[in-house]
Image (tube, rainbow, N blue to C red):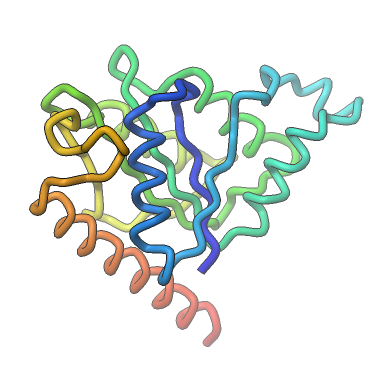
Length: 187
């Protein structure tokens, strides 16, 4: 199963990027995950999208999302919401050529605080359900990892066994949900 991961932080040492890389490595036998960079996406400009030729970074980003079976969103929480760079990436995916409609999504996030990006994920869910995006999500499969600095080592590996076991369950649920959707669609 081909999954693209979009991390809402462009910070080099982002815990959310480390989480995405951990997921990519731990489940590589079950999921083909590619982490897409969003740093080089320009601010969304509909004139550029319609009248001009969008930059190559935008074309490649949209093409990879369109070709994927699902999208994994890994978001930090900035001021009770998602970061602007993540919203900008979604804007590129949801305008003119709407590559997200019907594409399954999966959300997770981590923070050094205790709430584990709950508010940001709530906002992201609302955005993913809007008409220009229309991305289904598996209910009850949220991943909010709080106090990450106590659960991850310096290499970016999660060392907290209960969190690892929870992630194993979440991944199983997600894969089963995608396979069930494929079965229903094929009928």
